[in-house]
Image 1: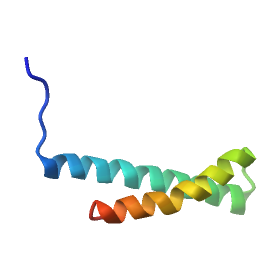
Image 2: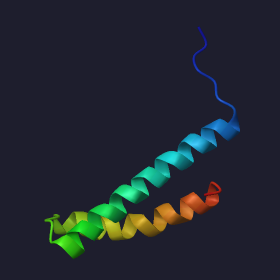
Image 3: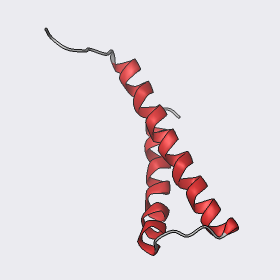
Image 4: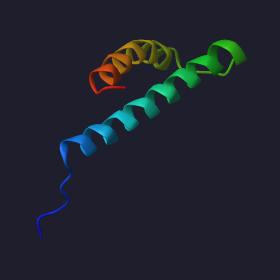
Length: 64
């Protein structure tokens, strides 16, 4: 048995969907922290602020 094989377009599409999902999650998490006062660990806030621009860059690379 060889395993699962995906063409490049499918693999890129899966990657893009995962990146967008993570971006939406982090963006919403920060929004609820800032606007609604939900608690976030300060380190999580800092990391999310770093990851969001990086995710946007990667999403653009993958055609999002």
